[in-house]
Length: 248
Image (cartoon, rainbow, N blue to C red; front, side, top):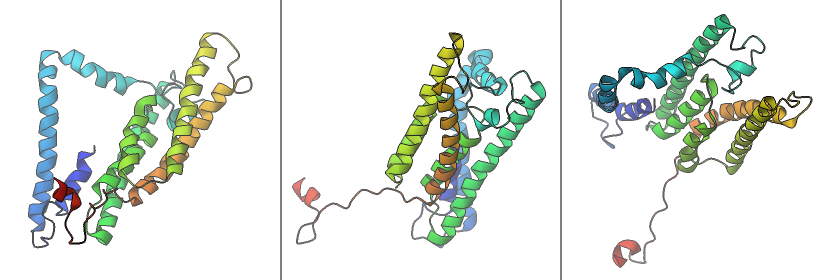
């Protein structure tokens, strides 16, 4: 998924900075070549296992494909369409899965398109901010959201200039849904009162779900506009020499 912004960066001519005379066709060819190479690496990594044990290799893909949208997925598709989104409603499940797929694809393409708008202004395709925006779109619209998905966002919180308030707010929402969900499961399996009127854990889940939805929408915009963190320039002495290099 994240290979597409890098390919756009290459197609925009970033691999030859300062060379505006590079033909557009050649730039596009370089970007397409990168995508082809990425696909080849994916195939080489998976092909031996697909040949040796096709059923086992396909099992994880099949599990995610056929997994119902229920309370364990913790996405907008389950909570927004309650009670019709119950896992036993096969017709609604199929339609929600299709809607999640289409919405995810459109969100990814929107992030790539926003990157081209920035390219028109800055003349450099912002592949790293676009990758971050694509990830937020994926987390927002995908039919499944697992607790460990927050780990995917951590590198972008470091590599892009994002205010600490956004990061802390997302951690709080993610903690609310993570802790609340497992506590809620304990109440359900222990046959204890588990409705939103009886316990705080289901309330924490709802706070986390909708808080995360709002934050992912906001972070899409924040990431798409963010600048990349650059290391500070090394100190120089009075003669303009790099102190670090001189010390080495």
